[in-house]
Amino acid sequence: MREVPRHVFAPAKRRHEAYGDHPIPIGEMQTISQPYMVAVMIEHLRLRGGERVLEIGTGSGYQAAVLSRLAAEVYTVECFPSLAADARLVLQRLGCPSVRVMDADGCQGLADQAPYNGIIVAAAAAFIPPPLRAQLADGGRLVMPVGGPEGQRLVIVTRQAGTFIEEKAVTCRFVPLLGADVQ
Image 1 (cartoon, one colour):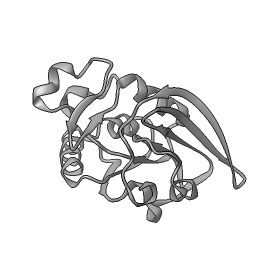
Image 2 (cartoon, rainbow, N blue to C red):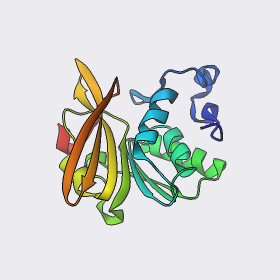
Image 3 (cartoon, helix red, strand yellow):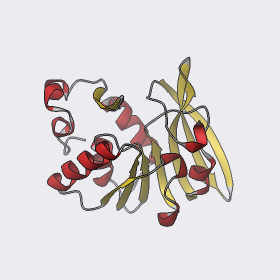
Image 4 (spheres, rainbow, N blue to C red):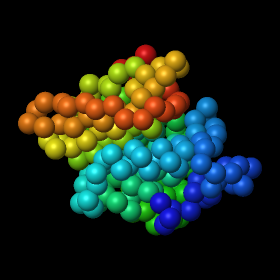
């Protein structure tokens, strides 16, 4: 995380907040996640360096930039074209060639590049969308906040021999996941 300058992902009027341990609004009612939560979620992926990772909820591109330092390939999906375009520019300027930004419904994942060794979802829903589970490689891990406005918890799903093992981690608060499978 020290290698990724968080301030370049923040809106100009919010750059003075870039290194605080809190989310930062970026437009479209979305945020750059709290740095602590970015670290916790990425740590739960247990990356070693050669993985293919899918991120749902590109936002500003900050988490994708961090992931690009830890995984071989990063595919990131954003449903707001304006955020995807901005993230794409910042990631290109920072030299993150292993990150591919896609405009799409994150609930559907990105099946044409599956399977993924890690899937990280930066938005909450009441359940994990089935297409995301289906795109997880055997031995892969999916990290996502699950719950609603009353409370959310980080859930880690590990796929082993075709079965899914779930564990719950810390409480959290994320923006809602948008898409066809969670509406």
